Amino acid sequence: MSQGNNDVPVSVDRGQACAGGDAPFTPGQARACTVREVLDRVGGKWSIGILVAASQGPVRFTELERCVEGISRRMLTLTLRNLERDGLLHRRVYPTVPPKVEYTATPIALELYESLVTLTNWAERHRTAIAEARAAYDREHGTPS
Amino acid sequence: MSQGNNDVPVSVDRGQACAGGDAPFTPGQARACTVREVLDRVGGKWSIGILVAASQGPVRFTELERCVEGISRRMLTLTLRNLERDGLLHRRVYPTVPPKVEYTATPIALELYESLVTLTNWAERHRTAIAEARAAYDREHGTPS
DNA sequence: CGGGATCCATGGTGATACTG
DNA sequence: CAGTATCACCATGGATCCCG
Image 1: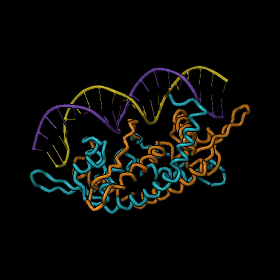
Image 2: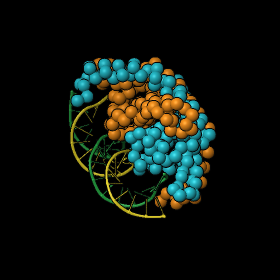
Image 3: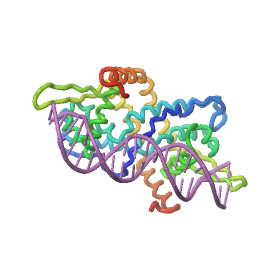
Image 4: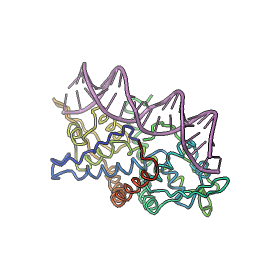
């Protein structure tokens, strides 16, 4: 997602509202900032898939590798680490041979999963509308190569 | 967000569930796919900020430039085009001199904005918990540089 | 089995300058 | 005012090999 890790506060600029002009200061932009935090955390290409899988119950590394489908060993590891770091995943290591590691979604992650349903519903409701809008746009303006 | 536009279906692999083993096939992964669509559309670094601003009423280009704060002319233009293309923003041009362009959020975008509130609430609820988890993780493992 | 380490391609993004 | 054009950077992610 956002690659430059420059921590632009995204705004929270009190002062005149951006639009309308009726709002005294733009709380919306603070909102936007918060949402971006979430998105930067969960917006990774693979985070959702992993989170979804782990929300059903404990998952092992190799299971995820097959499960998420398309993910590389590297990205799986990286994403798991980040999710664990943020307290969204719990990592339990069994000191056996061969090693066994289980990942479990934390309560926080489970809540997040529920929140994502709202977004999912939105996407499903307007999926076709958006596709049409896109097609229409490409028809009028130059088709994207 | 995910930059490679490689359309990996993210899964929808029916068969044994990834976790638990109780679910017959993983509808969750199909879910994940849908969510990713949304995130790829809205997950851009600036989309939210623009959407939020445009949700309050018609906004002009320069207003957005000040409003979103940190955005470059280039990215503003690009993000606006994408949002317009997806039917989330409506662009009205006044053929005057100097030119005047107004961007307005479409009904779809307004619905999306409402959906984002759910995510925002989640972020606000667990913001500190996540920060602590992250700090704790960095304390145990090597602090990141 | 579950990673870590390294090399490398892609393209999203910012800075700057120019235009109708 | 509202863009477009060009350049260069670097984070993201893939591939491969190795290790405990």
